[in-house]
Amino acid sequence: MTEHLVWHPSLVTKTDRQLLNGHKSFVLWFTGLSGSGKSTLANEVDRQLYKLGVKSYVLDGDNIRHGLNKGLGFSQEDRIENIRRIGEVSRLFVDSGQVVLTAFISPLREDREQVRKLFEPGEFIEVFIKCPLEVCEQRDVKGLYLKARRGEIREFTGISSPYEIPLKPELIIDTALGEVAESARQVIDYLRGEGLI
Ligand SMILES: Nc1ncnc2c1ncn2[C@@H]1O[C@H](COP(=O)(O)OS(=O)(=O)O)[C@@H](OP(=O)(O)O)[C@H]1O
Ligand SMILES: Nc1ncnc2c1ncn2[C@@H]1O[C@H](COP(=O)(O)OP(=O)(O)O)[C@@H](O)[C@H]1O
Image 1 (cartoon, rainbow, N blue to C red):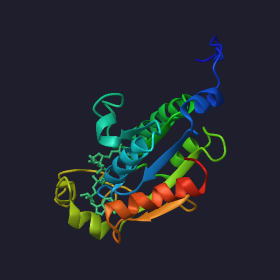
Image 2: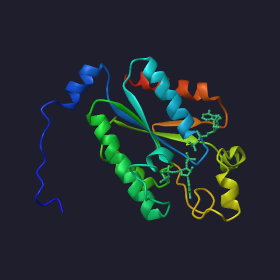
Image 3: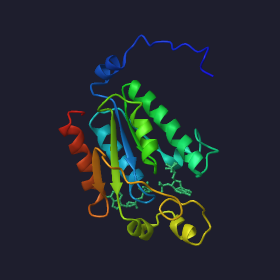
């Protein structure tokens, strides 16, 4: 299908754009169970980056599924396509010199590794939002776990659909232990430590 397509190179490079912005561009890929804290943390880190003058943007599972990925469900096939598209969108953000924070369950290791391959070394930062299923279920922010337990939602991650824990994430944030502010500080500290901001 790409047989007659020719890539048109950009006259402005990614490095040019990073220099203009005054910081590196990369993706913070938050992964974890529903209710683990991906959206809350991604948005808090985004707010702090904004205050630091870093050009950042959050791509959130629930929001993206209303627009770009409308029509995709939660079968294995649809989740793979969901993550593939977000990987590609993230690459565009990074190419444009910005920082992108993604908050998708992204349950499968293989899919996350495929996304990692789209990036240069150091650009893909996998952040495992670690939180036991019992805690997520107790939070039940949207009441979905109750519905899943009642059998009203099929293929629900952690209940009737798998979640594969990252084996070598760049960062692990345990949200069952600390407050949101403390978790955000850990992410910002990591970025500073790596010289990314
Ligand atoms: N079956 C099932 N399993 C898991 N989650 C479900 C399901 N149905 C709806 N939801 C809601 O959709 C949000 C997850 O979407 P994602 O795009 O992040 O999922 S995935 O990465 O494609 O697995 C998820 O949002 P978060 O709670 O923010 O993770 C849920 O609100
Ligand atoms: N350290 C923490 N980091 C992020 N969220 C936390 C933390 N501690 C408690 N929470 C709470 O957990 C819930 C996480 O919900 P949400 O961010 O929607 O999760 P997800 O996007 O992974 O589904 C929120 O109610 C949030 O206030």
